[in-house]
Length: 464
Image (tube, rainbow, N blue to C red; front, top):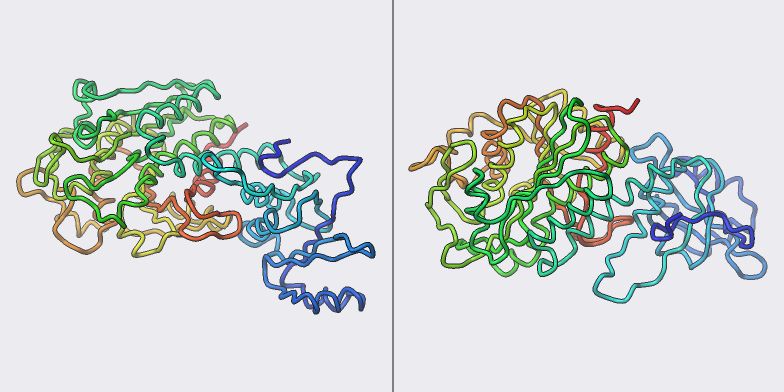
């Protein structure tokens, strides 16, 4: 199948090099069973035996005969998936196969994710090593994950000159066409006529018109699942302009939109029995003569007025209109994803998305799925004692309370004003970016929380 993922069919004319996985917990006993020559080779090559480390074992002709890889156990989170991800770009070019007891699907998934490269604007780097598809592996499930993650990464990595609101809408349209979904888009001043004033207020200063992207798929009588993603395609901060360092990565401020589109891809590809709706408010937060100003009062679709305490807290403003529209249908499950607050990153860093949820059982289920697939999240409270800080002085709400504390919680409480009467709501505040490279997770755009969210949805709405 797809060489893009480094996974190939076995070639009878090519001898594939065996990869022998050894669980870290059993490594000492495994060493004791080795013959003298192999043991001396491992010691001479500096093999550390740490998880994810590997050693090339040569044959008599000097060619690689096998590879030893140290992995986690099959019952550990992710079944050692990221250990396998250390191999494709580190092994010599060629074709490899799995040998010995292993978690085949985790190995194939880790391999596929590690083969991702964003080469749209440069010559491709070296080709990854190829892995023969393991026999005991659900290929469709592996490719479903790999394709969705790659799509999210591509969208986030694409610079804003090629990924504005219109291009984000086109990406949603292409996804819809692939799976037989329907997309409608409300653009520019039509947002005012159709009752989405907050999205318009944030995006009107850009020459690239704001829009609401609305994708629908599935039979109308099925349980309703609605996804909402923040689609700020570039964020200058508005008149409360960001510093140059703060603005540099703002092409990723549509990461929430990318993640929900990736999740929609997985849901549609698996044909989960849901009526899926995806809402993406897509804007650029720019500066011009008609940009919203500090202490302007902005209307929302719900009828609540919002005092703009800071023009750089624009994501929650556009999400207000989209979340209220989602809530009017009272979906069985509502999920929103957003690169919403720096406060979340200060609290938990770039690798751990923040979870807010108004349903304790649902939150515990999502946390458990995150641990199971080795994509953990961390829950913060929707602390009602801070709600008073959202009261505006001249409007119903302020988008940026004067308090310097609890920024992620305050942003989540702001969104909570627009999700009633939904009783099962998940809000993910994520970085959507790898600051440093790790096996299978290159520096750049990332589908933060995607696999955990899909595992939750697939369990909640099973096929068959």
